[in-house]
Image (tube, rainbow, N blue to C red; front, top):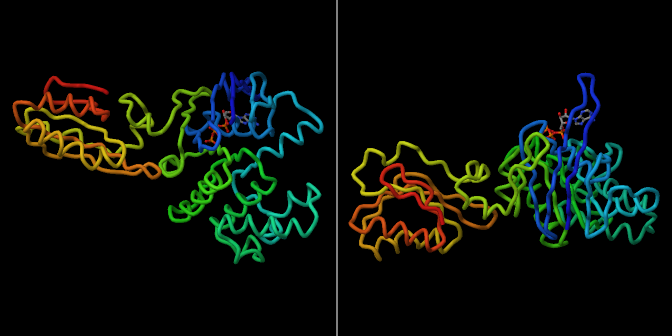
Length: 336
Ligand SMILES: Nc1ncnc2c1ncn2[C@@H]1O[C@H](COP(=O)(O)OP(=O)(O)OP(=O)(O)O)[C@@H](O)[C@H]1O
């Protein structure tokens, strides 16, 4: 578990001090993946570097599994660093070492005997699906494979926390998938808590349980991804949910038109047809679509309802836990 409280960091610069973190408070639940997103310059990398103990914050606290990391030095700082695996931004492998050699590096530094090291490296390469590339040098690997080696190396010392700064930047979507699968496996199989800094909402869509949106050094939104998509005002929802053409249904002959957000297999599969039959209304899908957040199907549909009990049907949908976010036509605008 990572707990960041009121973290501040200012850098000197020629034009005057630059505030990178202006009081960041954030919890990352143990064994989850939390995405840190936000525009360029928002402070994402600075936050990751502070948590990785590569940068000292000006004030605030960072606790990993209960231990406050700020202010540690000497051997206690080195011990704390071992708890935190870091996948740095960009190409970070040593060119003159093979994939196995790169993964072995932190184990060598920690003084692990050779036989143990060999079996640990083999385990890690297996975890990232690169057993057959153990003897390849970075130049003989694709960008995605190099990133997977960097993840294996970050996991070598058995950390409880893994930090990844833009692990998929400069990768194509297919390769991105293989790197995300590896981060997801680290969480699922090793129980590691993962903090991933990213510009790419596909990362949030694929593997993040939680997301924190940073702007101007502050967290402006934070929560479980599946909760945020059910929040009509969430900017995470606005970027992750399927788009709805705003003109859809406005000129139609429906008694009510509403945007409905459905989360989970049961809701996506059954809620709308059931509402139609319970309330004897005709229900037309006018726009929107279906997506997946992790393993969970999530839909945002614009629906047109025709029938005397259209309002009751919308209320029932809302009461059942789905979110009826808006009706551009008609008076109903209910959020569950
Ligand atoms: N070492 C540094 N010296 C001076 N200013 C810095 C330093 N590191 C970061 N900054 C400044 O702090 C602010 C936050 O930078 P940071 O790199 O954390 O943002 P970011 O959200 O990661 O951006 P990006 O998405 O572009 O990587 C920016 O204004 C940046 O210029």
